[in-house]
Image 1 (cartoon, rainbow, N blue to C red):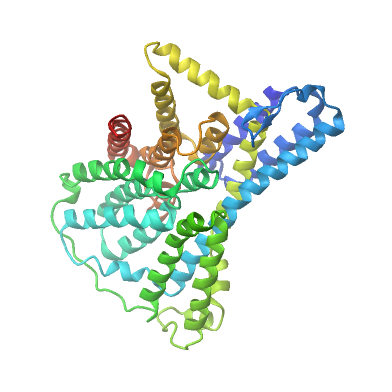
Image 2: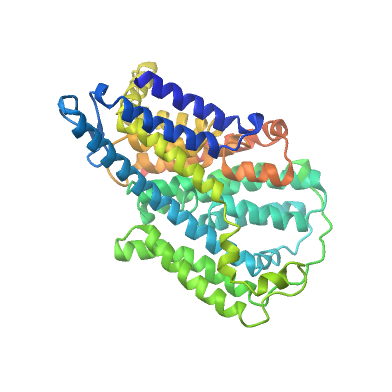
Length: 461
């Protein structure tokens, strides 16, 4: 039965990675895979002799001796446990996405465009790289990429030049998302799963992530694509006089969430709901002032009479939320049978056999680097979800921080390897093989440079 379950997971995984070829949204195979795996486990529950206790992170003793009813009860309890943990992540993301859309409702991100005053291609590269690095740590790398590529389209007219900037934005955004608990879905998973704390995450990963961004940006700044000057377009009038206010309020509210968690020790989604409530309150007040949005947008007059919160909720990426639900619960099914735990042990033994002189920590480092490179080929969300079931190290162990770095930045090596890459690919119609030829090697150099920096810091400090 275990072989069948693994085969179902592999097929579902392939369907997810080949969504562009199959023309099927990845949320469909993710949801189908989740439902089929748990259904197969329910049908074959009597044949399973091992069960993984996620709370104790160990295999249960005597599971094979339990009766049918006791096993079904254990399955239902485990399913409910994983649904609760997954829901914490999804509710958190819903809150963050809604705040970002509220900011966009007031055209708050137009404020960022005012920072770009130079015509030098090289200086613009550095401006966007640092904006991506900082912004992705606050509003997550996916949203930061969407915002910056949208601004880029208004600043750089030549698409052939613009896609170069987009490629470096992907690298910088993924690097920026790795060192913040709210900067990347995978990092958020580790944070909510009590594997890392905010202070330690920043302490361990800020410098390696910065290196991961600086090295490829520095190399790219000497390339022909970033030599010379560009013609800047005239700035369009702001749609709302409250745009900058809502931008700073929204970003501040998101940054408040880790502080709230530290003070109250409550799950992050509670703080995110409080932040959303505060931002939504000011949004309602400003929208009722009758000076919310000008007639620049043909649809703005109609939107001005509706709640900005309702408008924001209609624009959030619900398909992404459902995809995370499906993939996280599917991985939880394999974890519950102890398959991930056994896979981790076998992988560490295999890596150890390849280099018998390596110590345990070095073996783990090599395994994590392999996971990071793998995240460029397949989605990093299930890889991190799998790692939660593979390793049993305590909170803030350097291993968890290295996983956060590798999974967050490794996806930059292929344009389909991260959410930031996929959205930039769609917005600018970037060719997969163009990115592979022009940008992938820069991302790889940055990834390795950051990894070396992380390992060096761990040994010297």
